[in-house]
Length: 119
Image 1: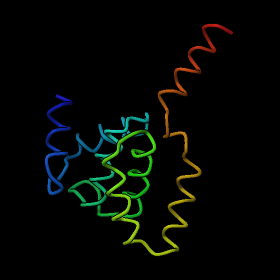
Image 2: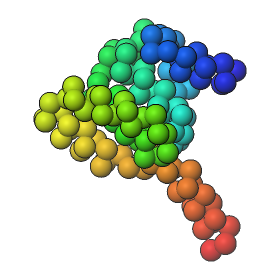
Image 3: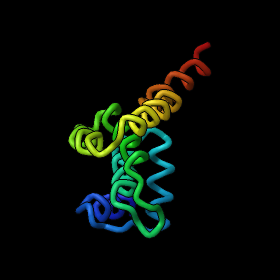
């Protein structure tokens, strides 16, 4: 089921995600999954029946996806950066700095688990 959803969303930028796809993307993106972060960013970049188009939010999620190793997000970041005003970029950077826990979340979760087991 997940592979089908990822394939549908990532197939092209015109796919309009439904509530279920948005819910899955947002949950897994918040857990630090780079693929779902990328797909969530796509949803915000293009707008869906569930979320309105929001370039600033798309930029933030592409940033997290890129930081977690999704190289495809870098191209989207550069494109969106050119569409944002300096004020919007400052706002995006503020959001990013307050939410860095979305970067490498898997690594952080593993460290917490190891601390509990061995300390």
